[in-house]
Image (cartoon, rainbow, N blue to C red; front, side, top):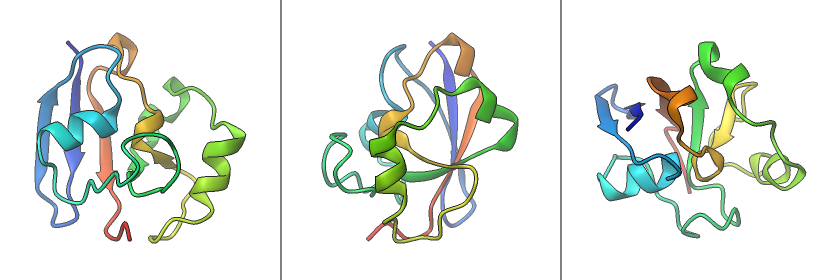
Length: 107
């Protein structure tokens, strides 16, 4: 099981073991990670699972789809070059150890 570390808006770090194939959003929700709202449940319709990916991990992620790109354009917190939707990050062994900073504002 790959590990993921969420950095919550207050700076607290939460390290979780995640089932391969689960989204980072689902892991955050199941473990009550502060700041992970995910109003749409992962259907990429709300942008309330906005995270900032540690730059060291960006090249290991699948490219941003046009729909995700559109949703990242309407996030409550500022979009950055490392912004992603946690619902679109499928956990795998290649992402073992990934660090995601939860955006301070989701709605």
